Length: 283
Image (tube, rainbow, N blue to C red; front, side, top):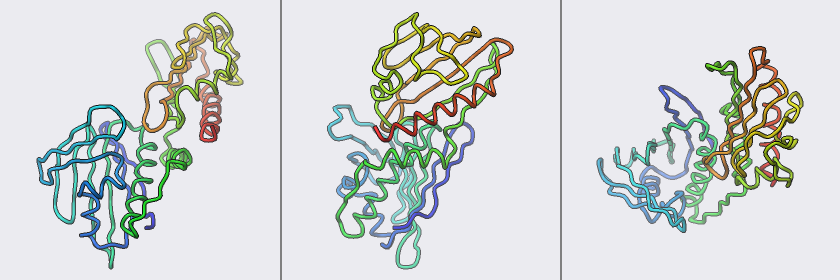
């Protein structure tokens, strides 16, 4: 199974991840592997129950999660060409095209959370690799060990780590949003270096950038949030919110007074966040 292409497009607030893979098996065998629950259980990220018809119900249960399963609706079931369904607010469409003695499998995953795209791509990369192994010889040997490396590669490919300068009612602000790949407790420990910050004390070095000396902590809720005031009267906020994949979503902002040099701030913070993200897969 060889990669063909992975692309990301965004329009009208929705993002579409498109992944293509060549498979050595004919469409009918691929169809069975992506629609029959017994086969899906070997490579899909959840257990699946499905009424294989347009309008039919489809259910997803993650083993051992202790959470109620999610449900969706089959939107397409055209054997052996197309299988599509909703999953929460997302839509997944699998297309199988004959190609020589084998098939071209195309997945289009459409969703609202653009910054989750690297997590989705990494997860599907591993799942489709397992699908290829299942079809080749029935032996699935895929682990999550490479998830962090894959995630960072997809994040770079899709240009998902770049921050922006925003114009708000209170002035200019920089904002960086980035999905991270380790648990929130690991990220917090990396930022604090093991010393828990206290309100009114200088912000730990891990929360600062070279151009932003540590000011006093104005708000702290471990392990989710730290804010501190800057010497110019602005504010830096680190928020670690629930994310996709294996870690939290980092949202970093800095705002400042009227003469706030947002472009320089963005450059400094971008370097800081990139360095943090590069270290995390090794933790």
